[in-house]
Length: 122
Image 1 (spheres, rainbow, N blue to C red):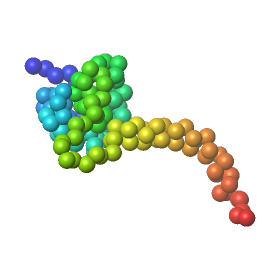
Image 2 (image 1 turned 180 degrees about the vertical axis):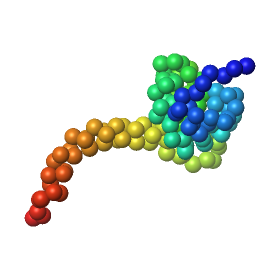
Image 3 (image 1 turned 135 degrees about the horizontal axis):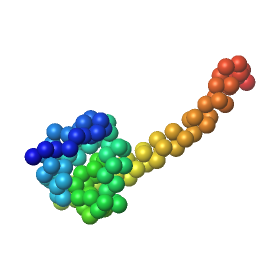
Image 4 (image 1 turned 90 degrees about the vertical axis):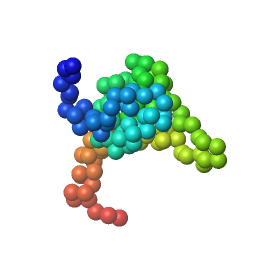
């Protein structure tokens, strides 16, 4: 069976060598290797943009989350296990912060350059 050519970001994906049954699993236990790969993946943003899990009703692992019917699945806790911080919320906050910085830094660059070029400290 011939597989379509991958785009450069797909070739760089940490999950590229994993079995499709792992990446497209609907269960956390089976998807664990893909979730671990996502945690260190350099192209998770490109993956999420291309897959658009919420719009495509995606099932599987994308951008560090397990999705079922286009909705992120909350990890289950085992009895007696401590509550871990919500990794999905932390990732969303980091992405939003990165996007804000990408907008603000270029806008502030001229002002910062002028302040450091010849400015004096009070």
